[in-house]
Length: 121
Image (cartoon, rainbow, N blue to C red):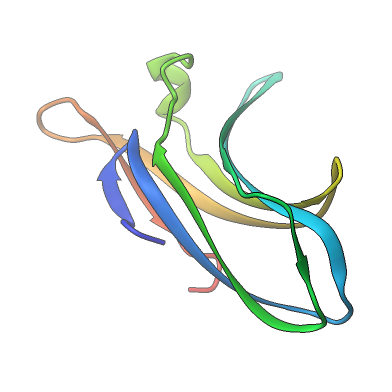
C-alpha cells in the first residue's frame, strides 16, 4: 500500500500477490472505499481494471486510484474508520475481497489525513 499515510483524498496504489488454484476467466479488480455509519453504508467506486484471465498459479495485480473522490461524503462520516477494498469480480459476482482499514484523523492544520493498514501486518 503506497502511501500508507497521506491526505485522505490523495491517490493510492495497492500491490496484491495472490494464488488461484484453477484458472479464472473474465475477471477484473475494483478498488472501493467504504464508510459504514449507523444504518447506512457508503461505497465509493475508485477504479477498476480491464478484464483478464488468470491461469492457475501465483499472480500479482497493481490497483491504483489517482484520487479518492470522497467529496460526496460529509466530513463527519469521513472521520469514522473506513475500508479500502480490493474486490476481484467475475461478471458482477465478487469472488475475492481484501479489506484494508483506513483510519482518518485531522492534522494540526485541520486537514483530513489517512493511515492505511495492511491486512497482512
